[in-house]
Length: 422
Image (cartoon, rainbow, N blue to C red; front, side):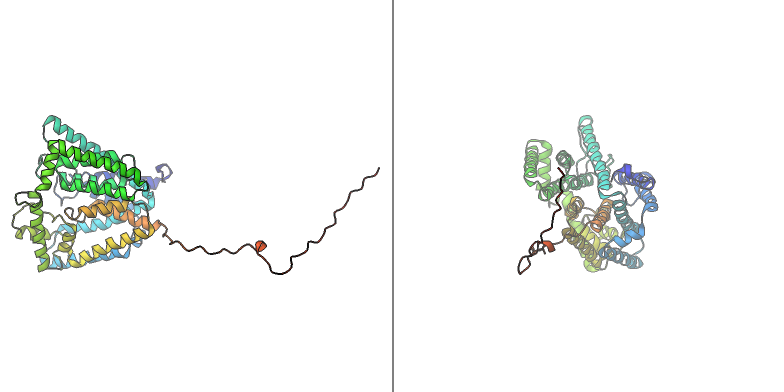
């Protein structure tokens, strides 16, 4: 849908939606100024709340599949019950906002069209690629230093609350949205470069996963396979001949070592979280789980906000029943996607996100639920794929049917002859 053909009401909604998408990628802007605190109220929270004026909430709630309703009801009841025992936490706003953003994604896709919505998101991620590459080059030239993981430059502001690792990860996940774009190859190089310079193992692996998904889902596989081989070959050469590449390889080699902070801290958090789930399989409530981890983990990390695993986080916050409802949502949506076969950009985004959710993320990210809402609307409007039926003989028209018996004899019709007088 072209923005020229939008009504004034739709144009206002489109403008507000664009501002919300931009601000949701600049998460250090909060109501209290510049802050990287994950629990702070961000500017995009306020802007997106104003979008409720344009949202057909009744239609959105009817459009959401029953599995999504089951998930939010389950996590809501489980969290409320946990708060009665372990205390209240303001982090419960995360799940409320997740439901709101899901309805927002469905409403935007229905009112503006899926292609228009994805075009806005692609423009924002393209701008992020450019800005981050320029910033890296600036620090390389002026300071001779780059914000590498896990410590990097603590004085540098990152677009996402999780720092450089999340920047590299979201840029890698966004590549699935460019599967049919000419920008896919340059943005893939950009994503891989950013991940390697940052020292983000997750960002690099998600870049590879995005490339693999595009290769498998692209109709012109031969052309994309050639491009993919070229990208991988260039990446291998880069890793072999540069010092930054050697440092990246060393980070992969040190996975699991006790003196390697990134992986050892995750393993410590996961083991602590699993023990906590075994003690209370019904959940501690959203926001309370971080206090459980801090109190019982062996490494004594002070800044724990999540366990860097969405599946464990769901069970820790809302119990195993919430984890089951989350898996039900995923399975149901992907089964519907398989049957209806919509455009695979949004499903690809969610698939790559799920790959990264094993070692990162919380499960309450804005873009995850926004994309889920877009997929819900796309599935609601996409026609179901009808399985092919065997060919059956079609009845011939009545005038062409063979009639048994003698053929009818044509009756001669007298033709009047015009006489001429001589």
